[in-house]
Image 1 (cartoon, chains in turn blue, purple):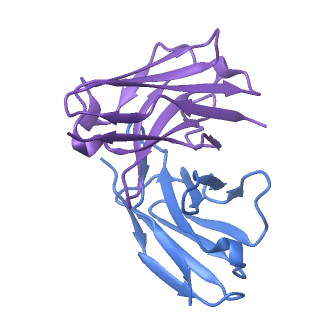
Image 2 (cartoon, rainbow over the protein chains, first blue to last red; image 1 turned 90 degrees about the vertical axis):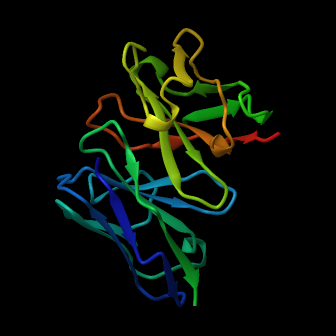
Length: 108
Length: 121
């Protein structure tokens, strides 16, 4: 079974700064990776699929990259509404569908 | 805009049962793979079960196999999760989520607001 590992667990960033989140797969998943944002008490929201395609309505400051086993979500200039938890998810070979453990982006 | 509205959560005793429902609207329900995802308190997201558009293919995480049953009623655009033999570690918010129309489209583009399931004596 594929294991998805996200790092760091917590990322402290000043508003306006760049945030870089990592997601590693235990085996190659091609570009079959999605990213989600979740705020406390809310459902997750799709940000990125296909490793780099922004979902409908997602601002351009969110970008995804990578393939194979290494993936990155970059938020170019953090806004107040971007402080949240972020999850990656693989869908290359399922079931099961596997999420990473998450990265919390907090205000520094 | 896609709407997914879960219901049926609540408090159950260990060994008990609950049936979750998810009413879908604003898309052609029968064309899409539907899924339940859960989140235990303070924890991350966990895929629980998925069902194909026709209902003929069903998939489960190992921890719920033999205890949970996913089903759908395409005539009513509704997804279900029958949960039997509940355990304390099933306590979580359960989300209904929409996948793509094909397994290769395995990302969740729409989510419900979630329903709380608590298993406790």
